Length: 255
Image (tube, rainbow, N blue to C red; front, side):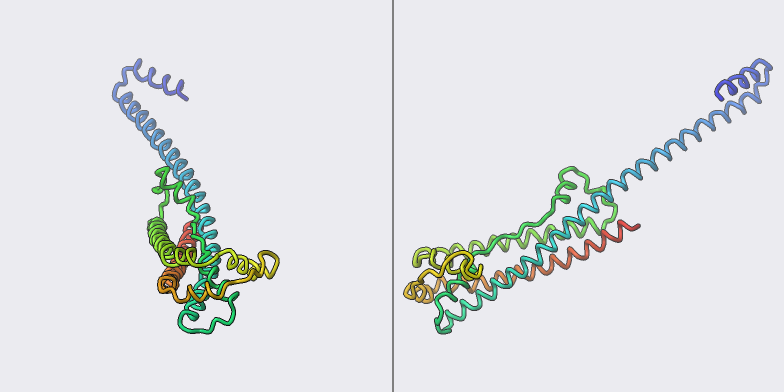
């Protein structure tokens, strides 16, 4: 093709047909420009296709992380509600409920205090942020919801730290200073496992009644009831927002 163009160009020049040559030259330049523009469009389309493929991979990974978080939130909500119920039972003893079962006190006391922190799965989000790839998410609503979720998690984690501080100062210190914890935890494990582990160790009524006269210890359970209620509400809000984000991702992935 190039050889043909060269022959035509040489023929026009040798025949002295300058005006036709100029028209031909302009046409040749136009063809070159059109070819370059087409090549650029093809290259741009390929880049957009690869970018979209990468975005969809990130969206799929985000959805997987979020689904894991919902499962964990459900588990923690049930667990924390059980511990909140136990805190109310212990508070009943402080308010005058007869201490007819030392084992019942031991179980609910340890149940409240043996809590664990919630850890979110945000590996994909952290990868997006640390690699500077957050801009690859073209849906602004998804990015906004992700950032909002991170703020909710930070608030919840701050409240968990607050609750831990309350536990250490108001419950752990009085308990460790005034009672033998080992028989309580042995009874707790025994009841929790249906007798498969732990043991029905003898408990001291004097120690437990002493704890029930300790105002600091009582205040610890009052704060536990308050903070567990707050954190459970935060779990519910996070779960709702997570479900909404999954729906946004599903809509974006089916476009």
